[in-house]
Image 1 (cartoon, rainbow, N blue to C red):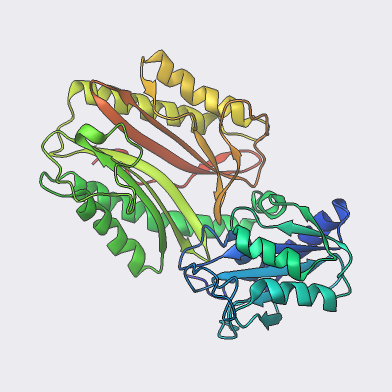
Image 2 (cartoon, helix red, strand yellow; image 1 turned 90 degrees about the vertical axis):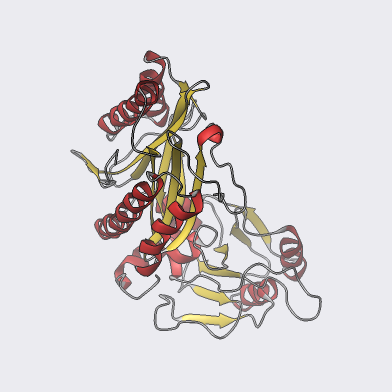
Length: 390
């Protein structure tokens, strides 16, 4: 839930960092875009800068009635106070961090262009932090309405600021992980019962998380003969398949529980509770691989190195890696650095890292296992404390 718990000083620090980034890229302002619809993973930059998430789900533009519904933007001049552009005037002013809130009355790109003109930036270089949230029709309309503005693509500028957390943000992540731990344990207990469906297991997790004000983002499940899939369902990510005795069930559970801050971890169970020797071998291997990654996750180590640490354990045990990703930074949504081959980005104190793997053998099945850690200058703090096994 987005409330007013985050101190004003946290937002002021973020605005100053964003202004410094604007100056570093030789632009007069940043226009930071986001899209809402009830979750946080498409509005993460807006939440970070303004504690605002647009409420409408995505709707195609209706000529003459609206353009950019479900979208919003924060304008951060290189000098001066930030401005929030909202889709409608009905917003939670009691929780939004920015004082200057301007309603677009349904025409978000138009209002952004008009505000840039009002700020004297109609013919200036402006950084556009839009990422994947600015759909092409709305982008075209923004360019049309702000024809004199020279937009510079700076999609990852705010994400780069988000990757280093303050002590207060670490507190929020600990609290979010507490919700995730309880939700995941409920899911594991449900999926351990023969005859439970994947949907039942997800519902057990959601029942806990939603009652604590969480916005669930994903529960990517597979089971039994489909365990080699990251998610055998698509929309939703789970199915109504009943779990049979001896089936592996795994889930990557991801939700935003506290002020938009998330947890993201994975566990696996066997329906009926009796793991075969072959199943135990792959799950033990996955657990050992992630434990090794957690132990190696320290300031100065590279993302590539953490990827290799996990892979080396799996390879040493003859276990197949299900996908070429072994983690990422997280906070308000997923962030860089990604633990993938070729990424020489160094882990820094202040980062929150999810370390994960999907692993198995085609003749046995596949499991998932994932931990969340907070990186301190002198230690790594494990916050995904739900049990590995039920």
